[in-house]
Image 1 (cartoon, rainbow, N blue to C red):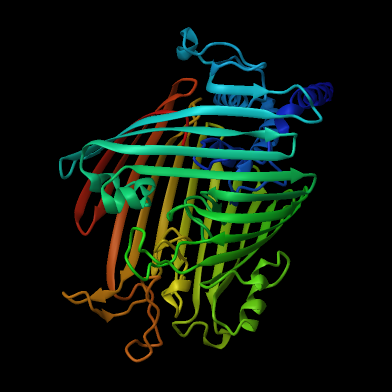
Image 2 (image 1 turned 60 degrees about the horizontal axis):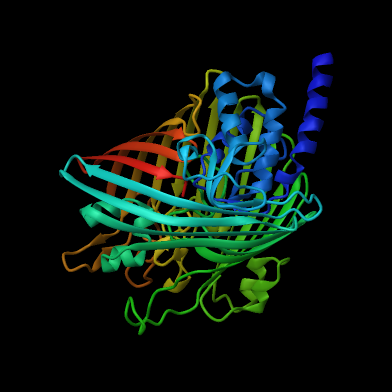
Length: 548
């Protein structure tokens, strides 16, 4: 009892000394490994009323979560404490040594000295005010990497170098800003090998023009009490799962969005209106390109009791000028879509997390694209759904074990108007797998005291491809392409799951990383993929300053 009272006193003191850090409104990119660590802590039951189903999170929410985890210090393993201390330093919960190139009134230690190779936080410029009522911060960090990819099967390799910067901070407690700019260029090797990485594949200059890959993400955010709002372009995830996100994934390029929401301790409502890239109707690139407008409106209603969360999700995709009906942040989109003469592509879904016992949690999502109730179970083509279910167990031996199954029915995410398909720049932005597919994923993670766990992921994917002749003409539509809906005169209204040209893919990926000194990271991965009886072996080593 005395120990618990002592811990409570320490927690109060800790919160009083870190309230400056909590006033940080900008989002933390999903690439940051802190999200993997928070998933483990969530599974262990330390993060009540918390959610990882909508990412990224505001920096202040991550700081809040790390502070709560510190309150469970007596239950953490030695490795978990080491990792927690690293993130506490990174998110400025505890006082750390800093070094900069350009001095400010709060930071004046020169980084171009022996501090470059120390564990000091290294920036080009940093400023932190001491005013609790109008806390202001500015950070300008360099970004750099050397990325080497080797295809052992075909004896090909590529080396890519990236330089850039990240500017972020908070103004007067309530306004946050974030700007990240990077430029990647191939030094040697095969361009096509680099396209295995979605970051390079999604860049039109790199993929289509064999040029450099310039990528930027940014946002401006406001948060006060229960209200928040933002506008910007950033990679997002939406939906519950381990390796799978049914609603929004990160396979397509990042898209722009205006977001407003209300967040309380166990309830959140979020509205966003997103701008997508449609199919060009003239040339594919250049000043003569004409691209029709395309938008995505989304609502998410979330309840978060102590044992998990329940989310209701709805969206509508439309391709014309901005429609005021869909700008209403508090409405029912399905009904609005019908009132707009049923021109658009609407969907809805449920997702949730349940923590029935300590160290175990279950996650699941279900997306309804379209359905006719009386034809459920008949194989009717228009009963288009996608779902996943996952379980995760976090052991006291610093290991996580996860299992997930995902299934996407034929024709899901497609639409009679191809412009209204669930795609951004022709790439599926919803499920991680195509329609008429399923995937079984096994996940193992070992936390050994570093920011990056040792991770092994095994995926077995089945996909029923559409069948084409030698001239590229569609001769059998299995509903396996989100850009191809049913053809009334040529296709059967009854579909069979995994019909068509069945493709089976088994992939095994091993990945981890090591922070040499603060900021300098060495990451590696190895992927073995067995596809059509052909083995593909890909190895990758990245030397990186900062995560991006």
